[in-house]
Length: 154
Image (cartoon, rainbow, N blue to C red; front, side, top):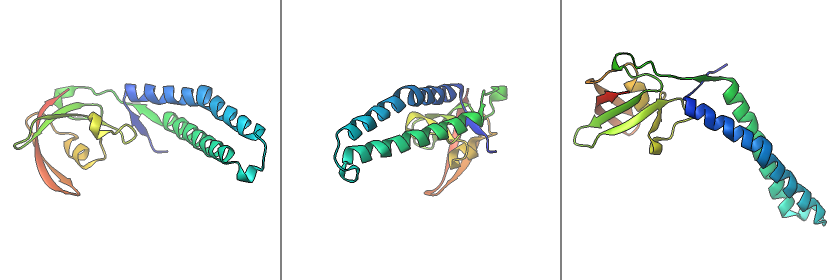
């Protein structure tokens, strides 16, 4: 079974989403289904009923996905040893001529580059793992290669 790497914050977010879907969203969708059925008419022509059924399928699918992710989760706590980049590390890097950027190395489930979370499976994440402050790292990405210098590891 494949392990799902999550930060403590990511684990908590997924648990909260699962709880919300189970306790709130399921009830909302059930109510929509009930209302659509009570409107009468042919179910074949009832677009509200069809929309509610599709939403129900999405919610149930997401619940199953979250249950699986949490069941296979390994919460990552960076050790902070010797400034070496590892899962959970916050890394400040700089590409030549560009301002410094800070990213947290996470598992693919939590990856959100716009918020500063990159997957350890991404080209940049792979290149940074195991490196330390002062290292210049070659990143081979689909758009081409580039180099970054590691300025800080937390």
